[in-house]
Amino acid sequence: MTACPKATIPSSSEEIEIEAFERLKPRLGALWDTVFPGDEEPYTSVIVPSLTLDRAEMAKIPAIHWYEERLLFLLMRLRNPHARVVYVTSQPLHPVVLDYYLNLLAGIPASHARARLTLLCVYDSSPRSLTEKILERPRVIERIRASIPDSRLAYLTVYNSTPLERKLAVRLDIPLNAPDPRLIGYGSKSGARELFADIGVDRPYGREDLHTVDDIVSALVAIRAARPEARRALLKLNEGFSGEGIARFEYPPVVDAVSIRQALNHLRFSIESESVVTFLSKFAAGGGVAEEMIEALEVRSPSVQLRINPRQDVILASTHEQILGGPCKQVFLGCVFPADDEYRIELQRQALIIGQALAARGVIGRLSVDFLATRNEAMEPWRLSAIEINLRMGGTTHPTLALRFLTGGEVDFDSGLLRGLDGQPKFYRASDNVQSEAYRGLLPEDLIEIVTMNRLDFNHRTTTGVVFHMIGAVSEFGKFGMTAIANSREEAERLFTRTIEVLDRETRGGQDA
Image 1: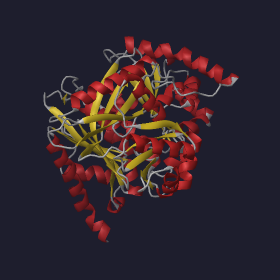
Image 2 (image 1 turned 180 degrees about the vertical axis):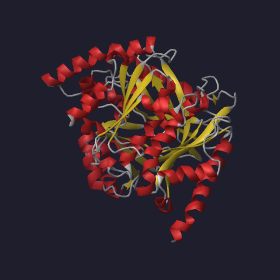
Image 3 (image 1 turned 60 degrees about the vertical axis):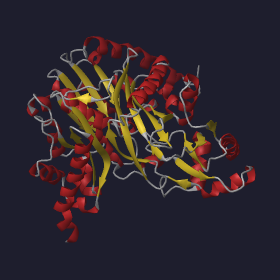
């Protein structure tokens, strides 16, 4: 059995916090037993959409604090007329943005939902995680607590789980619906590779738990020995995310320890602002892996989203084809639902094996597993290789939430499809990175008006159309997110493309001015 990557010995105060955190966990199981089966009972969902990630890496993402809007699709929980939601942000939500989401609630008056929603803001745009900001403000914590009628019927939802989120859960006296921070090592690149090896899931050849340059050189020599045809390899930081923290290594003509060490000076990165010196220093501090770069005639990047509830049930949430970009084609740009018909069922099967292994080790919450799908001939079977586990929400989470809440459907395991209440299978194309300098001329209300006037917005009768996220970023950054939902893969692509064309046409005059 793979052991969770080692943690430091907790201090006495941390031990007290962990004991309090453990005492809260049974409440989460009780909610799943008594409240959620019918979703008609009162409860409070406290949502803190904090990206508690490496500050230096977060600073490289344009409009990073607007990513807190990605979980606004969870306001759909207000469809239960007895549910309450507390949503905390770094900066105030634009009133038009809030109205936009509340008006997506089918069957519930927006005014009724608004009365059960508490919005809190820390008014702090500094490049730190929202959870840090909340913990610095005891009165904000008290306001959150005052918004919870019964802490026994409440829980905390976060983007990702760290000791900071554990501390916040304890101070709020509510359980955390996310992995225990002591288990998040399974979501590191090294921890994932170790788990894949332990349960017999195929993965690229490589080495994990590397820190020093000597470690890296030794691993790259071993990869080339095992894969003589390999021309490239990938170095990945343990805690990299969204394809960042990855470097591509090109093998020199003559391969030995000396030539490989020299070739490390020519690493190529997923983001252009990275350098060899800083990358290797991060590698030394947090560790990472080296693995073969699988190259074939066809290479795809499918992923699977899973949910593990407190009863250790592993639930298939969705499958996707990831759309990647950047200099090394490793940066997440968007996704298409569902994954390709040719390997979707096998993809689900392998992901569930991984999910069950994580559940057996005590992991709960939302997670995703990324794979490579490769083949060299059109009639050849696809090879699926697991490459990483993300023990957190990610770029495929909010489109899945949107699809499920807006269409009323669930993914069927036998087919991997989701059918809406109209019986039609649903498909989508989504992106967090719809961006243009011309869009900076738009306010949130302009964006919504353009789509509405062109009848592209989501239609509850047909359960098709476009829904937006990260709307608050449009004016400052010319950037927002979008999910185009339709009844076929081709329709979803056409709807996505048509929406971009409409927005480009509507903003062209402002760009020329």
